[in-house]
Image (tube, rainbow, N blue to C red):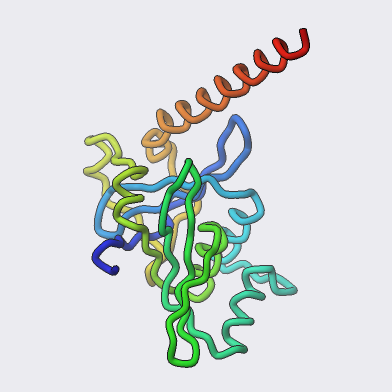
Length: 193
C-alpha cells in the first residue's frame, strides 16, 4: 500500500475571497505538486493554532482526540487522504493498538488536525494526487520550496506571488459554483410558474 501513497506536507491554508471558505494546500514532499482540499473554517483555524503552537486554555476537539489515543495506548502511525469520490475527499487515520493496525474513517480535515498534533506523516493516495493534484506554472517551479510539516516549520501565510499558482484554480471553482447556483435559480423559477 505504501507505494500507492505519496507523502505530503501542509504548505499553507488559504481563504476563498468569494465564499470565505478555507482551503488547505498539501504539497507533495520533495516535489512541487499541490493538492488543494476545501475544509471548514473551524478545522482550518484548529490546524493553524497547532502549526503556530498557540497555547489554548482547554483542549480543542482535536487535542481531545489526541489525548484519547494516548490514554488508550493507541499509537497513530499516519493519516491518509485515501480517495476522491464525487468531489469529496475521504480520509483515514491509521492506528496501532494492542499489536493490531486499525484504519479509522475520517474527514481529511480531522485527520490533518490530528497529524499536526501527533506529528505523523500525511499520505495521499497516488490516484488522488494524479487526479486532483496541481502543478504550478514553470516560472514558479524555480523558487525554493517552503518548508513543510515533517519536522520543519510549516508556512500558514505565504506571499502574493505564491497565491497566483492557485488563482486560476479558485476562479474556476467559484465560476462553477455560480453556474450551479444560477442553474438552480432557473430551475426554481420554472417550477414556480
